Length: 328
Image (tube, rainbow, N blue to C red; front, top):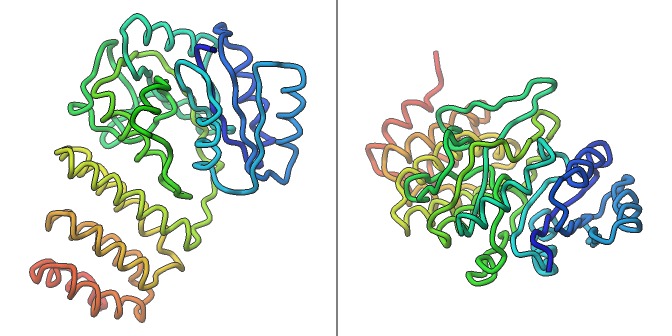
């Protein structure tokens, strides 16, 4: 049994895949298996993976036809054998050759079920390693155990390794969502572990700026479902900080997702999400949605007349109604 299983979903990543794979192969830590799942790539990604697997018995390649990254990760999880599980996206990479060895050693020495380091972002030629505000949880300033109830962060799950038996015991996998499937997985794993061992070292490098999200209706639906899932997890476990953080995520992402997708089905989901928020949070979220849709007055008419009347308290409707009135 290998000590570590590295799971990598791949789709049309030929431009970044050599760097990602190279960062795995360069690791000083060698007791691992790499499970790469090609998700119906139309470029040379699958061929690159198959060639690597021919010459490296630690690499296994699986193929599926456009089922999504969540399905790719779940498939690899089913076939994994490692004591711990690591995740690496095909367009990202490990920042140095000691990452996996350091994380595994820290996990074993501490007895932690989850162990992780700090996140960095590569934007062009600039490396971002300091984070503030809603992103402060991306990095740690000291080594040691952290109680998740005191942490309550939701992003950057790839910088951690997870005991496979923890995921199996609690049936933790990725929900069937095309967008925002990572936070529900991360939060469930953290709740199951209770605490994790944190290290200050950089453990994952995320490429920023090349991603272009096609916000079609299925992806917009998935986003709202994922946000609602995390809100419910926060609500059921008394995680008020996570709940507020997720509302901020919703304010940021939902308006973009609704562009050209605003329909009764999505509105109904937004209203159901709003029903789980306090009035201040509800107002902020609906105001963000309304602001993004201000130019589409015929759609806002339905939004105000139907949804706000059913899902929003009278005081909130009055404040939001004033925001929606045409400006002179």
